[in-house]
Image (cartoon, rainbow, N blue to C red; front, side):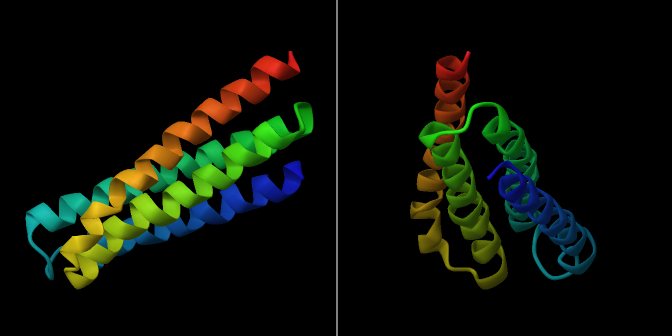
Length: 123
């Protein structure tokens, strides 16, 4: 399953770069500085966790098991919920999405903890 997580991370990275370019070039004239900063925060966390998914791919080869898989799924959920809600708020103005953004952040935190447990148990 390591190569699967690595591929997911690589695709997430490509999408993060594309969204970052869209934000820098396509949104600058369409949204205010505050919302552009919100979008950029989404891109930053998206790209960091794309790299985390690459790490999950490597970890899955070294320490296969439920903790490693859980970390991958939690990172994916975090990108979708955290970054996705920030992207949606910027593009559509749906401010209520800000209420679910912290759930994505929690997914990121839990993903890192699961990855730590996988490594700890696999040593």
